[in-house]
Amino acid sequence: MKAVNTPRAYGWVARFFHWTVAVLILAAIAIGLYAGGLPQGGQSQMEAIFAAYSVHKTLGMVALILVALRLLWTLTQTKPRPLHPQRRLENLAAEVMHGALWIGMIVMPLSGWLLHSAAPGGFARILWPFGQRLPFIPEDAALSGRFADFHEAGWWLLAGLVVLHVAGALKHAIIDRDGAMSRMAGNPDRAPEPPSAMTGIMSHVLAAVAACTIWVGAAFLPGGSPVQENAPTIAVLPQDPGTSGWIVEQGVLNIEVTQAGNAVTGQFDQWQADIAYDPENRSGRVTVIVDIASLTLGAVGDAAKGPDFLNAATHPTARFEADILPPAAQGEPHVAHGLLTIAGQTVEADLPFELTLEGNLARATGRMGVDRRDFAIGANYTDESTVGFSVVIGFDLTANRQ
Ligand code: HEM
Ligand code: HEM
Image (cartoon, rainbow, N blue to C red; front, side):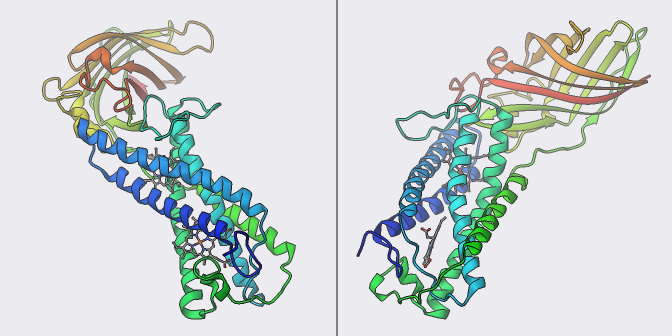
């Protein structure tokens, strides 16, 4: 068999690339789904998830390298001519499909590498001696999350394209029996000689535009795991007499942790806030009490509330008692400075937040990062690559002045 393509069939180099990349991509999808479905929680379960993701990432990276080499090779090759030049729509559909598969073969592993590279803290490693992170990609949980959304929407699209592509190949083999399969599999000498025909440049342009449009659509599809947005139940503590009290109307209190290099976001559904704030001197006091048992945190909520981490049974509430300090300068946020108690350990903490006042209505939103080791949370998880040390606590609330 010839190494190079002929107008009749693909050569062995193109075939080698086609079939190895096909197997790698199908294996990456299967192992990615398997890894995502593994039970989470204990150390040994985490190690199994890590091992599966490492294999997934490594297969994906090998696919990416092969696709890059394949692209260079393909650019030097003639494409076998259409078997049925008169079936213009079918040829166009096949060309769109091949173009979209090409884009998918590139953007899927690339988005995986980008999400891996932007993931803060540790992660399941790509099993290779080269670096893990890409230059110019900052460690940023939100950025990693956006690539993850694309990666999760993208695999559905790629899998759908592969199903259509294989269905098309089977139609040629079973219904048309026109020997199209022999062009990529089997004896190239048995591939029929296609009639010579010119394919218009416009149909190539149309196919390329359609293939790109399909993938641009994937960028706007929502990702796999939506953050739960349950309405929180808020019970407000008695107000501090003598200061101007604010009643929280609605709000969200969430946390973001990094597990196996992936950001996991969750929220507390029950918490109480006692806020006293004087808009004149822009200062006040706040006490927040959080019911630990009300935490939802993806698939790891139970483990997070268990004895290794927040230990809700022994320490049912967390508490933040702080003075609200005015902004240090114009344009700077307010800061709630005080004591944060989680899992029985008390630590000094600063929570910067933006405050907008409109009459008697206030909207406040802020975030702070804490280190779980300061609270002896997850003390047995000393390796940041399993459970990240940094935990982001964020809130967004509106309150009414009484
Ligand atoms: C596993 C079942 C598969 C079968 C039976 C199959 C079959 C074929 C056949 C017969 C052709 C030649 C079409 C022609 O004559 O022009 C072809 C081409 C092609 N296939 Fe597949 N394929 C499979 C999987 C995949 C997968 C998983 C991908 C990528 C994700 C893929 C990407 C392509 C591309 C891009 C071409 C165009 C040729 C090229 O540019 O190299 N195929 N396939
Ligand atoms: C051949 C290309 C690839 C395909 C087809 C693919 C496909 C998948 C699939 C199907 C999932 C599971 C999604 C889910 O559970 O909803 C997944 C998850 C994931 N993949 Fe890939 N992947 C590829 C390459 C890569 C590469 C090269 C990396 C990193 C270097 C990577 C990193 C990840 C990560 C970190 C996740 C978990 C994402 C999350 O939990 O949000 N993937 N991938």
